[in-house]
Length: 301
Image: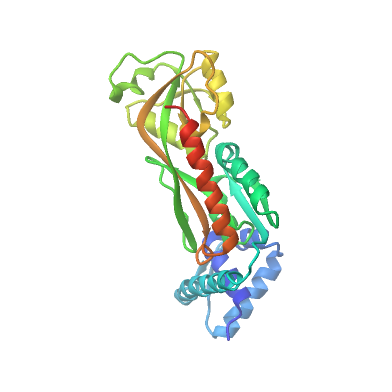
């Protein structure tokens, strides 16, 4: 019978691409990862890897195993969740990852309510870039994560991950004054303005740049800031304009005008496929949705 631990190593290699990346994710040495893969090749009596320079490629037989590994791992998650259904008292430890704006506005209120109502359920929180969340879920570093995507920057979570809708947001143009142009020309009207965008390789950075490109210009980037409170402070100081999602507007500095755009951001709850029925994850999801409802009631109009 095939060893689930070896299958997990092969699955990680399929997602991460290099033995070194798998070793780092699973806290193994590269040598140990190679040994696991060689042992799996002996178990199935056929080659699973071919080398191309410093990288390895999976053979067709390896991809067959990866596909079935997803089914096996999902079944194990479902089995664990089913066993927990019989527990009278909710308990356990849930590791949650989320991006900064969600941590402040959604996760912290949910954490407070869980501590008040579920004393035996421990929730630990990590700040996580949505681009890394799927890998952290797959390698069992997290149990649940909040991820997002923009209309013009779709995200790909990959195999083995399930998503549940949590929040749909409006994206605003934050500027020192109200634009005196039709809605479809709001962004274009700032083609000569300085722009405040996120750091490269973040979804927020890509969203801002693509939104400007769609209006026929490259943004003149004056500041690169990921924290939206600081972004709004810079706008208030006259340092430029920015695109800010609804969760980023917890306080609006004097003098800053928010203009809603036809750009949306969707936040989702992500977890390993098969684990969604686990009572602890159900409890966490319930409180996250309650926090979203409270935010929607008090957020900007």
